[in-house]
Structures are given as C-alpha cells and as structure tokens.
Image 1 (cartoon, rainbow, N blue to C red):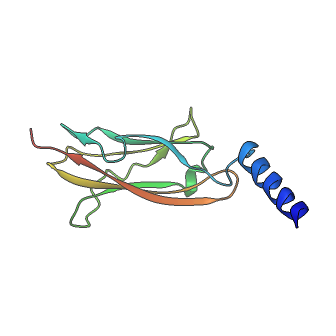
Image 2 (spheres, rainbow, N blue to C red):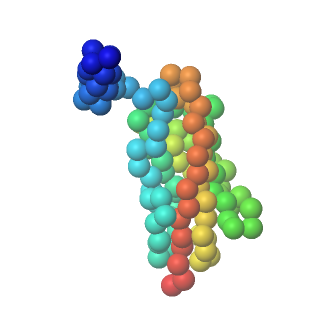
Length: 123
C-alpha cells in the first residue's frame, strides 16, 4: 500500500513540475482592444494575436452589437508579415458594449472558437 501511495505522489509531483511541451491548439495571447476593456472611442481595427500561425482562409473574426447585429467592416485578414495576427476593421461605433467573436484554424489543424466583450463609452 505504501509503495502505491509513494508512486502516485511521485507521479503527481512530476506532472506538476515538468512543463508541458506545447498547447494542443492555438490560443489567444493578446488582443486590441483587450478583453472587457472600456474605451473612449472605437479602434479602427480589432487585432488578435495567437500563439501559433493561423490558416488565413479558415480564420474569422467579427464584431457584434448587443442587438445581435454584425458591425465590423468584413475585411478579416491574417497579417502577411505575422501569421499569428488576425484583424478586422470596424467603423466608428456609438457608445455601447460589443462582442468580438473569432474562429481560427491553426497550422496544427485545431479549430478554436471564442468571444469576448469590450465597451465604447460616451464622450
């Protein structure tokens, strides 16, 4: 019994101490605007940076208002100089809360889908 407990504790410690070699899919590293940011004005583009290169033809980003209407410019692009950066243009937005939605395919073949809000305040 003591040997089994010792083995289990040793295995647990090794799993906690040894870092993973890689994530199994792309994840969002940073964004502009940031998640839950409050801005005095809308940016010209929403920009998303990931930890892995993206497949441009299978990666999307969009911006939605609280009424469920898409408000971005539809010009989604993976940066030709940085295949980890995805962006979409947005027009001048009135005060309100908006949701950035993205669905990306990284070069490792995994699809990641998520969303986050940001707010444009009245000036």
